[in-house]
Length: 220
Length: 220
Image: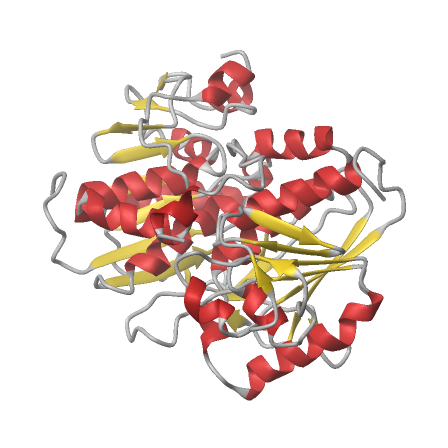
């Protein structure tokens, strides 16, 4: 598959969910995928440790608000997947059996994937699998230093809205997930499709992956 | 409350959910609210007809993907609310008892609200309550004509990222929900707070409510 060659095979997409994932990290890409599914043959799985609803609530602020999303599959019984999307969020900053399970799932499923896409410090979870070692990648710019410490062998790119290396697409913080997903849709289905979806979202795209005002803002 | 005067009282925020709401219409604002809750005293209710998870899946495309979100309250047993956020989506385009219930809830709760905020064609639901009659408002630009037909007595503003009239804030399509929420946060808590949240989201704000590239795109 390459730029402007339409994707004709059905794509099987998965998104991992874990406690205190960042809502927009997941739902920016998911809204693009929902819109894509109106015209393209897709399946979607929301994968988590159990089938219990997964909260976005931060564990670090006692009064934090959150929302709960219902998974469709567990990590122990996943459907076949072509694409995996990994959001970030404050939940990535804890050490827990749940997060260990997310990391193990990413490591185990990667060999079957056509594409692995991360948003925000979701790349920190992938870095902890070793899959990014020797590869170029980016992550959230505000949480830059703590995230890159998770992957000392990764070639971290500080000035990038998103980075592709092989079949791994990593993006910058939160709303960059929308731009990397649109870029990925453009790559697989052609840019006209990506632009139609962006226009439907009334989203002003970051179309150049190397332009990154937030690298400047956070002094990177 | 006015620009740059900090909000000190706890604010009680509600978001209405209904079948085939647009994911990002809700989760753009919700991510801003979640981030705001790290430092401000807020409560959040997700309100729906029942406590069953609510799907974003479009009823108009057989293979459409969707996600399910868990409500916290029903329309018949709501908590006290100061702010109500109304997303849009394809679900607003159907006539159903569920949508009639959403419209009735908005009408009934409005007198107790300090602010009513809509995203995308969520303003069409509010228009059907009559609450926008004689007021300035905007909506999704791609679905402009079908939405404004729902409120023939509304002073619809075609070129606007968002519009405020009294305590009703209406925004344009999907991603405009992030911008109107940030503008509202700026109004209530001061713009520094809004900008910190925007920067954390790595979101390039539309800060001028009258600049609207999508009005041009859709020939309005």
